[in-house]
Length: 107
Image (tube, rainbow, N blue to C red):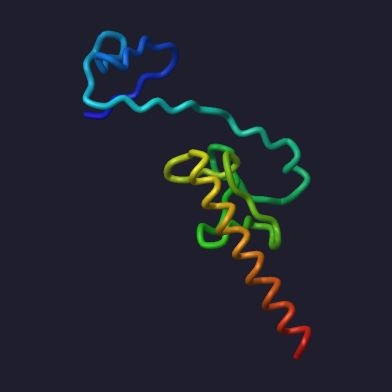
């Protein structure tokens, strides 16, 4: 069974208990709320929870040429590793666009 505790908890990593209840594994995730006042001047789409929506294959937002990664987007598992991976996806997408543009200019 998977259980979620919100708010203050008493976690004992020696006995694997949360608030005195025994668990096989304990995973602690810290939440946050997106803070996007700077993005309001753009017409970037957000989902119902306020996260920026992106193309998962490129990390590009609904505004061409604007990319979003990290805590402003909602992925399956929000963490720094996912954010770094999205950074690579965005960088490679930008590189492909620039190389295509360069090729078009040189033709």
